[in-house]
Image (cartoon, rainbow, N blue to C red; front, side):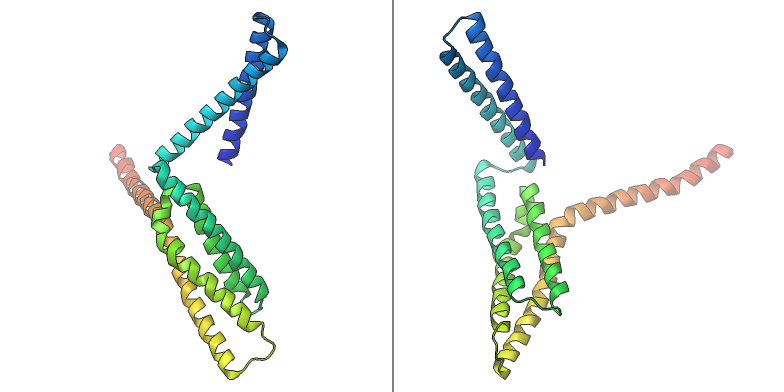
Length: 214
């Protein structure tokens, strides 16, 4: 949402400058209308891209990232989005009422990690194990489970394989939740600190009131 408003602001600023430069060039300096339009267009684009550069620089600075690190994270997020789409398709193909709640929970967790990281790229490094290992594992196992579960005839060996895959997916679900906790750990610690401070303040107030009465 913030990036959208920044885009609107850049566009508005660029448009305003374009009109202003065109008006000055055409009306004040009596330049040809086409030349004036060209001046206005170039000026507006210059303002737009300058503001875009400033916004990007501020964003990187606030996240403590270099441009190279941000590009690296963006590539990984793009790949992760494709994997999440594959995961959703696997759950649709292997739809089962018994697994529905678990599948919803998995999608909720992986999307939560993805969107938190997309919003605050600096958190990517807290979720490296998720992006480099756990996401791949859950996607591959879910696709395998969906494929095997769709077979019309299930032999004892196939049933055992499905059972084993489901157990592993259950274990991975717990791992994904731990990944989410790691990503949110700083927020949780900060909240706990704020709660401790608030409790201390509440404990002090009765003593202060009692001292005033004395």
